[in-house]
Image 1 (cartoon, rainbow, N blue to C red):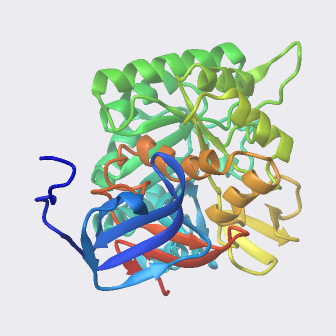
Image 2 (image 1 turned 30 degrees about the vertical axis):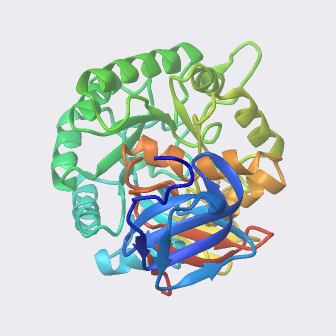
Length: 409
């Protein structure tokens, strides 16, 4: 067909067309068009290259269009806590709190608890995953370091128990996505192998281990994940630096080893860029050192996200929130975050100087890839679920779409 002949491609029929500056898979596109049909994205790209189309509704946005964000590590929000909720209905309060602020894909995190509690909470979350309300389940413990427990209940921290992992994975019905464990914990090697076997990722953290122990755990995790061909070939590190033995020039500890592994492309590191967990320059250094797409921004949010200062709970422990910072009541250990993921992206860009596109990818396409869901969520690309966040020039949310529907509650 010559350039002057009309195209034979049929006209696309969309239910919604979004136009404006957008972060697409190829980067920041100043004048982009995203065509949505029901729950899915039909086409996206520069508006000048758009195929012939009609749209039942069009929105021209003068801010920025982002893909729906994906949080791999979230304990709650809106006054509700996944580890403490009475039922799935209460858990949905937290899901909707974050969804209204742009987190269209969320992994619900539990904390260290007794096996009966873990079974009960996992069962409730499995129902939410089956209903499509959450993307998966994260177990933070109980195979952790007591010395680096942070806001984890020491009474229930135990040696690795592969049978408990298998039982919880079965209750999760395929929704168990990640599990935090300390590499030096007794039985950690077996737990790593079993996690890969059941389709979950080892997430190394809450550790007092050495640099060598962390490196060895990364190697074992990678080998197990490749062998089992799971959701991702790479393990993760739970909130890098937090809940880890500090660095010292004669004792480098686990954090440097994790960062090294991320630089080699062998590990994805979580970063809580909320201004409380890490200094802005630390966030900048992590992005500068780690390989492209090997940093994921997370919130570690607890019930106080979106709420006023006051008293809250995180599992069995009492938490006090003052000036937006959550700490264990009567102590100084940080007890989760109070930010939404879009707040974390904003801090990374405005305070740490992280490139906008890279920060957005660290909160969307990178966590989607960790979950093995990169073909479904995490990007404004054809065939993905129609998840989008419209933000203003200050990266504050203006409107949120999930599966093509405006989020209103």
